[in-house]
Length: 408
Image 1 (tube, helix red, strand yellow):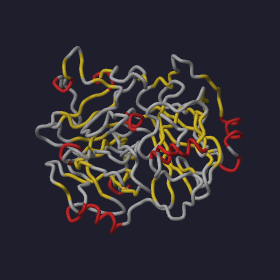
Image 2 (tube, rainbow, N blue to C red):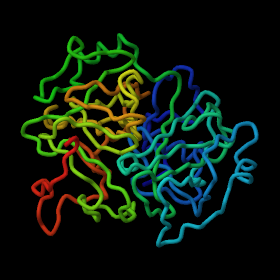
Image 3 (spheres, rainbow, N blue to C red):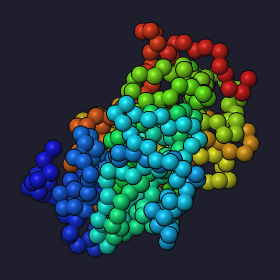
Image 4 (cartoon, rainbow, N blue to C red):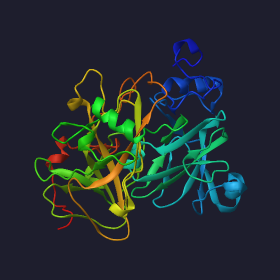
């Protein structure tokens, strides 16, 4: 990848240009020019596939810290807070380090920022991170909120990492989170959302019917639901097992599903989530994001249930979209990473659980999600993280149903 020529990206918004007339999420070509201009700085060369259509993957540095508790740096600053709450530091050797379940770690990242005054950013876990039940939050030098990078921020970036269900093996350069850059308010208004639903094929029903504004609840975004079909789908979800062996983040397709997950079957009646257990499900609706739009998943309403419906909530332009394919072939389900709280909770097919907030791009990225760099999750339905294989000794695990049933 050539970062030395601006001529390759003639439509990119340069970091030193006026941002007054811009409104939205900045695209991949802007990220390249920002790297060239020093708006984004790296301690090591850019990695292959690190730039996404609307975001940049963030890499762990040479080492990290085991800390006593999660904290926000605030006015005191991260360095002084770390002096008080650090238990020990450690290096990340080539063979990696195992991060234990429910322990809190803080990692300096290889990327730092020198943002213009009107440019802000926001971090979120990568898809594979959320599906492993690894909780991550982006931290700035004097941050008073997690994941938010204020406009004009200049300084280093850090990542808080808390494995929940599985211990994980990490190495220097591993990417557990990503960052997106924005100017103004990128979110579509209520009326813009309605118009987009009626002019583009954004949402599809389970039977692949295009959903228009009259068929979709719209309240600060699209209200979407969970898929728990009783017919033709033997596996409708997964529940994480406890005390499994560590998951190697770089072990793509190396871990057996059966050793880490219990399957939830469509003939289970009812499906009841126990408190503080971790589950993977999929949305009932299928999503298709054209080049000028990206999206963020947010919890629907605490009144709908005391549960968290996602860790990784950002969708780059082109998610579930392919210009040469019909929407029915390209559209993708949203994978739900659910952790219930407090009391057992009943789930039913079609139950509304989360919102999808659509966002403008300042311009279309020069490549789309799943194209050029590849993707493990394009056009997905129910899908675990890329570290898990779908076969055991040559047999398809979907045919090895076992005896586990939730709610029996």
